[in-house]
Image 1 (cartoon, rainbow, N blue to C red):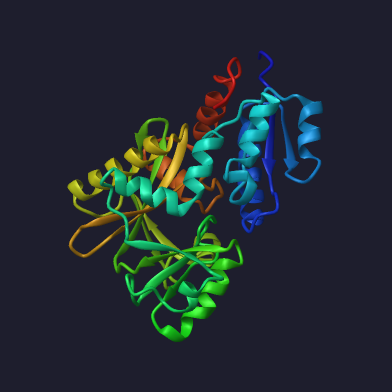
Image 2 (cartoon, rainbow, N blue to C red; image 1 turned 30 degrees about the horizontal axis):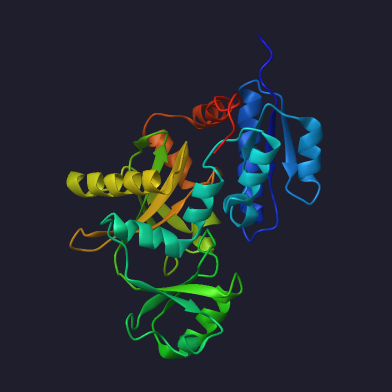
Amino acid sequence: MANKPAIAVIAGGRSAEREISLQTGAGVSAALQDLGYPCTTLDADERFIETLAQMRPDAVFNALHGGAGEDGTVQALLDWLQVPYQGSGSRASAIAMDKWITKALARSLDIPTPRGVLLDASGDAAARPPEAIGLPCVVKPRAEGSAVGVSIVHFAERWEDAVEEASAFGPWVVVEEYIEGREFTVAILGERALPVIEITPHDDFYTYHAKYTPGASTHVVPAHVPAGAAAGMQRHALALHRALGCRDYSRVDVLMTVANSSYVLECNTLPGLTPLSLFPEAAAADGIPYNAVIEQLIQAALSRAAVKAS
């Protein structure tokens, strides 16, 4: 068998999603080894750029989640090193990580998204729930993933705690209208939307605990919704993926009301690839096994080896 390109898997890092990143990295590394790729896993500490420069792998598989790994920082460093990688480039990553900019872009494209306001957590406007949104509402960090720092506020007494939790990840918080409904996600692989997944969390919503604890949520794929509703979610997800400038893959989270009206929440440019992650489930429902997903993604990175990633 011909020698395959050498791959460096970057995982861990310092974000609030470190442990999940390590799980994704382990899954990806195992798949790459099964596929015959020489593979080394690096923790994204202060030395990993120097290590990469010395290693000069043929490509990187970025298994980071949240923080610098998903906000375009690591992507820009890899661009500078001229090492190709899977997933979105630095600009698309930065835009998608910013929930407020993503919301503005969705609205400009007539993609339905919950009404929201952006608040400086240290300003006077953050002292009470905004009148334009009212209660109940959702309070979330402007740029975090995996529902980290997200709260649903039903009563004014909970407001200050919710703002404090969200602002632990940055001074700006997004406050959205609370929309009661079912939770869904649409995975994008290449230029195609995969089957819609319905998520039934056993918490109040799809919290970090519900995402990553076995048995803490139930997933149904394909989701049991009217065909037109599923197609609409897929259409909106793919439109947002393209408008953000994403490439290779992403996952778009959606809410749907009892009247079958859907609302796009956000786009994740580095979806989890752990045993409990939604993206591999969607791919499997479409007949694409885990290793085939990893093969497609690393081939996408290698196809950019001759040109600077953007």
